[in-house]
Length: 404
Image (cartoon, rainbow, N blue to C red; front, top):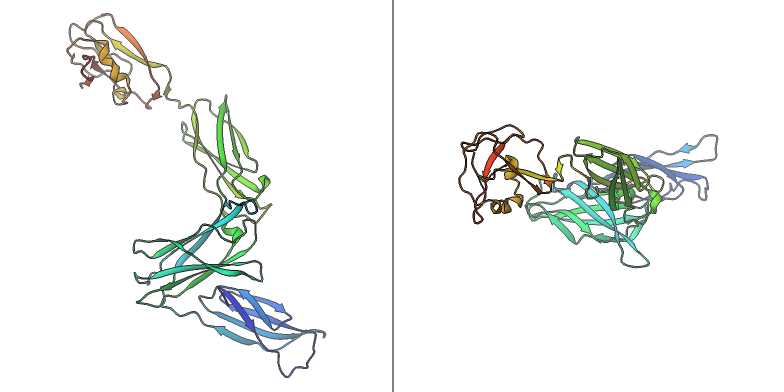
């Protein structure tokens, strides 16, 4: 009848008395998964994946006596569709997202993306095609049409392995089911189809929260955000907040139902903040969490230098001493250092300890005066400073050079 749809029909026993009103039929589905129910009609429509075939049985139940009377079982089988083993797709998954509908009457629509892996025995020229149909209730009634995918992604052998529906007829707040089938064709083998049923709410992935902001006031970190783009109202969302302290390499995770969070933090630290959302069980069966929002960075690195760099400059030799790590920082201060001196020469020196000025040869010895130049800068310092090395302040037309 359709994708994953079965019509099971039978005739009453011709030997039973006509006009009986206390007859029922017990229907049992044996495969692909067990199920059983009772009905008062002689036919039944239901949805079930059919790529492995179907086996069903029916018996008559006569009500009204002290105990119900049951007939023997009558069975029927539907064979699996043709195709070579190992050619059907595997790992078929689907996800829906809410997107803008661009109309006043329907501001929200639903996109659908499905992906799979090509069958291990599928030839390289296999072409997979995906179809879906919406089921509005269980027992399942199908929507008015089957939709075929038009936008595919391929693997390295150019076989289709993903499908994208930018907009669908799926309800963004509904409890529908989707019947999805992936067929295949090849010149070298018969490709076996595969179909699956998906509960829409189980594959619905929320959009990330919007406009995430973070602010530190003293020792308090305040985080706020807007609800995701969705047809669901504000109270229908749960949130997870992720706060990463770069100073302590510590990750804090919190789950809340409001769109604001306040945390006590270290005043001298830098934080990365992200938030994600999911529809809460209060409004619909829980679906998938959204992707994390983009990181928002707040706070000040504990190794941030906000004042300046002190350079030891000898007024006679024109030598300056700066930390070795600062040479490699690429800071623009090194473009103006040549302007501070016109003297030549470069004293040989040995390595010193942290905070020490490196002594040079004569006449740079004893307690000669040193001019300290304080240059403003802004950049993050490394976690450790090991040595100072000497630098010669060269002429205006020459760059600052380093000698070990």
